[in-house]
Amino acid sequence: MLLVWDIHLSAKIKDKVLNQIKSFIESKPEENNIIFLWDYVYHFSYDRKALLELFQLFLELYKQWKTLYILSWNHDWLWENFVFEEWKKVFDLLQWWTWTIHFITKPWLTEIESEKILFMPFCLDLHEDEYEVYENWKNPLTETLLESKDKNEVFSGKVNQLLNGFIKKEWKLTIIHHYYTNKTKFPGYRSQFTYKDIALSDTLLENRDLTFISGHLHAPFVLRNYLCTWSIRPTSSLESNQLKWFFKYSKWNFSFYARQPLHYIETENIWATNEENMQSIYRQYTQQLKTILSSSSQLKLNDFEVPELNINDISLTLKVKELDFNKIDEVLSPALREKLTDFRLKKDTKQVDDLIEKLWRPDEEKLQTFGWWQELLKDYIKNKFPNEYSDYEKILRELKVI
Image (cartoon, rainbow, N blue to C red; front, side, top):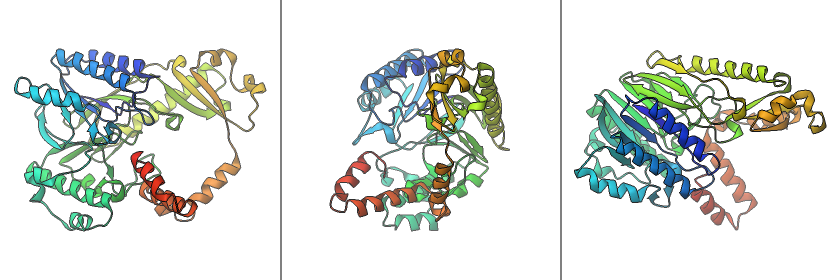
């Protein structure tokens, strides 16, 4: 099965992204099961035309008798409607005739290529009475969460209890989800998340009969029984020096295929004076990624395919001591600059580093969690704008910031 994750389509890059998806699927004609996993919408905009073109790709694959699994996540809901809601209703009606395309907005246990797969997409609410396995496994953790006054902790309790019920029914499972994991330090990540962010229990990572696959965090890692596939493209310069794209997965074995349409590379000026050094940087973080993805004793990396770096697809950020564009040729050769998609200078100051260090020092354990940052933001707004807080809170919830 092929995995296509966190597309985040925008008008600016949709053509490159869709062409890359199509090209990759065509390069694997033997693969008939294709899983599109959530976050089709770009972070900061809803591009209806881009989504229509993505749906056209779904139809092309459908006509080729590919079996498609199209799941929802947090960016893919407009109020109470899935962004592909109209088409989901049409294909739900057609299921009596064919069973080759699925729009999935609720937890669903199925079998793909002789492997039990549990899909856990994002849903606005979880109606536990729809699942007979829900009552099969209560434990102290879920009972505590369900009694919480925090609505996200209650939802975490429901999700974990439902997941435990499925695990009791099918002891060997591959779980494809888009949730956080409670208080777990992942390779390459500073932030941690809690049940207030809606998270799965960290104890599940110790179960060798389970495989967890997810995106959502936008950076790669393998940890015990968990493969994080991140996004198929970098959505901002915050995702610098990363490789992204597609996976093929089957029974605890996976292959990685990098084909991204844009690279964000950030480096100090000493390394970026010419094209040869850019290739050196690329090879370096490619090897780092391969090491990360090969680190699991349970999940096996079979193939690691990375194309040559195309300089024309690079957005380069140079960290410099002084922002002096008159001296740009001293740090970046004109020949290289003409080939780049974009470039910028970024001042690297000791003062900023000191400020960040001071910010992290007060209570590092709390600041490691995304939920605590949300509480910090809410407290700040309450103190700064006490009379308008309810209006600001409503806006932030609609934007899914809190």
